[in-house]
Length: 410
Ligand SMILES: Cc1ncc(C[n+]2csc(CCOP(=O)(O)OP(=O)(O)O)c2C)c(N)n1
Ligand SMILES: [Mg+2]
Image (spheres, helix red, strand yellow):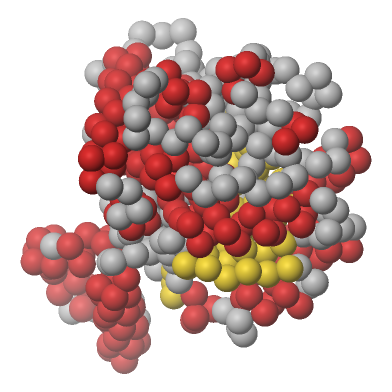
């Protein structure tokens, strides 16, 4: 991952260069900043057009590039969610739908071989940095033709060409990024590491140790907290003491707080923090609120209940009634208390989902462009992502993979 030559075998292509190829000559395209959303450096420098000499200054915000990145992230997540529903993805799939503004805003400042440490919601970051999306899709489907030969699956994706690695253990992106930052500081000053994590991860000890070490050793790292207020079905406020931004600040991290659905706001704040970290002025913490309409993972029961209460009542009703009258198990008092807790949780989820439905970063990003430009980008991205998914499905074949298939027929 940290080779000195910096030229690993590469299956990646930067988003900007993919875009240039697909959208060559398109007048709506961003032309100003060749670095925006582009960072995959494994291979021909002419293709990626990134120069390490240019690192160190935040790049300008380009609404078309930001929108294009967010649209591609959204479409890849939606395509994978459909593949999951069709039984093609082994295990769970955690989409990052609703987080695109945060990821795109931060990625706009990553260049060259700046590294990333990611959590279980990682697809958008790989997509935005230019990882080959067909290889990524195949990996999520557990295919041996995938980015990591089917060994990683969706929660442990890795792209050495960036370099970037994901980990499904909540909070693990902290120590991963700190390790990357130590390597950067010692071997390649000028590069930064970024850790993406949820607000739930901030109650994990290893993440707090990472904040501490980053400050104590003045490491070039940015911690990005994507706060959707929920950890699976646990409301953040039920398990979190104090204010997480003050908590990060108390370690000595330089902090910024933004709305994650406003990509331009994220981009500005991330630019300030990354510029500081890159020039040895200390690590940072970016807090960004977001709303994830799909819930924790595909098939999230709370979201199913909110979307179609009657259907869920029909499905769950009989077993709830049966267990309410069962002779064994908890006391009547305990059962009533449990039912109240569940009802309260669903009510809070319903309030949250209603209040925050307007927090869609892609829809908001669309309003930064004129309609024709937005439509053109959407149509080209649809074409690109549909093609990638069709190639991936074709390679996997009609059977669900449910893991790595080696040698045998598919
Ligand atoms: C150490 C650890 N504990 C528990 C889990 C199970 N788990 C997976 S995701 C998740 C919720 C994490 O919440 P948050 O950090 O807010 O991220 P979000 O899913 O909301 O993006 C939990 C508890 C885990 N993977 N690792
Ligand atoms: Mg969360």
